[in-house]
Image (tube, rainbow, N blue to C red):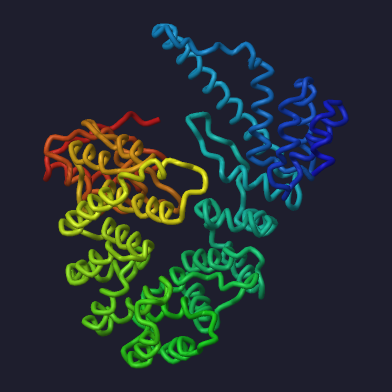
Length: 543
C-alpha cells in the first residue's frame, strides 16, 4: 500500500503504467490510490493509452470500476473539467440552457461508458481465470440506461458457473445477494453444492446464501440440505452462519422428526445454538415438547435475548395461544417480529397493549425506549394517546435543561439517556404505522421536542402533492417512502398508510428500478385504495 501511494504522487510514465496495471488486477478490490493517481496525473493522454492497453491482456479484469475509469478519462480529455460551464446561479434562462447542456453531456458519457462495455464484451474470450470471472461479472451486471443494447457474447451455463467459482468468497456472496437473477441457471446448483460441501467457509454469509439459492433453484436438493443443516448446524469462522429465516423456508407446517433434537439442544445449558433452536421450534416444533419448552422458558421468562424470546413465544402462540399471549405481555418488543406478526394476525394485540404502554414510564430508560418503538410499530389510538401524554410529561421534566441537550461534548449520562428516549418517542409519534399527523400536530410535536431533534420534526410538515417513491431493492423487495417520513416494505402496509391521508390528497409518485411485473400488483392495489379513500396519484414520467 505504501508503494502504491508513492506511485500515486510520482506522476511519471512508469508510475502511470504500473497504476493502470494495478487497477485491472483481478480480485484486488477497488485500488483507491492507483485510481486517484491516474485521475490526477497530468498526462491524461498517457493514462488513457495505458488503460486501453489493459483490454486485450489475458490476466487483466475489466471490472465495472475499471470501465468507468476508462470512460471518465476519455470523456474529460474531450471535455476538460476546467472548461465545463459553471452553474449560472442568478439567471433562470441561462440555468435552463445549462441544464440542457448537462443532460447532453450525461447522455454522451453514458454512450461512451456503454462503448467500453461493448469493447469488454468483444475481448472477454481472451481472458483467463479470475480476470475472466470478473469481466463476465461486469457484463452480467451491466444495467442498460437507454443506450444501445450490449452485444455480449452468448455465455453458456458452464461459462457462467466457471466464472462464478473463480470469484473470491466475498464476491460470490455479493453476487448471490445482489445479482442472483444474473446467475440463476440450472447448472449453478452444482456450484452451490460445492460451496455447501466445504466444512469451514471464512465468508460468514456465504453458506446461508448458497443454501437459500439452492432451495430456490432446486427445491428437492435444497430441502435435503436444509434438513441436514437443522439436524447439525455448521459453524463457519467461529459462528453459526445460516439464519433461522433460511431454515424456516420449507412449506411444512411442522417437522415432528426434529422435536427431540430441538428440545434437547434448548435444554443444554452449554448449547451455542439456543437462539437458532428457539426460532426453529417456533416455526416447526409440535405440541409433543410443550412441557419441555415451557420449562426452558420459565427459567427466565421475559428476560431472554430477543431472538430467544421471539422464537419461544412464537411457539407458545402457535401451540397454546393463551399462555403465549400472557408471556407476550411481559416480553413484547419491537424486535420480536415473528411473534408480533402472529399476535396481530390472531387479533390479540389489544390484550398486551396496556402492558407495553405501562412500560413507557419504566425507570429503566432502554425498557421505556423499546416500549415507545414497539407502540409506534404496532399500536393504535390508545398507543398514540399514551405516547403524546408521555412526551408532555417528559417535556415538563426536562425543558429547563434544554441547553444540555444541545451540547456535543460529553453530556451527562442522564442527559444522554433522556435524549435517546426522546428520540424514540418523537420518532415514534411522527412516523408510526397506525396514525397520521396533520401539520398542527407536527407543530405541537416540534414545540414539545427538546434540543436539536426539533429541527428534524419541523421538516415533516407536508402539503399536497405528497412525494411517494417506489423502488425495488435486493431480490425485488418493495421499498416505499412517503414524505421521507413513512416507509413500507409490503403492499398492505403501504395502502394502509395511504388510506390515512385526507380525502382529496394528491400524491406525486416516482418509480425506480422496477420491472412492469413487479410494479403491476403495487399500482393495482394503490389504484383500488385511491378509489376507496378518495385520493389521487400522479405519476412522474419514467426516467
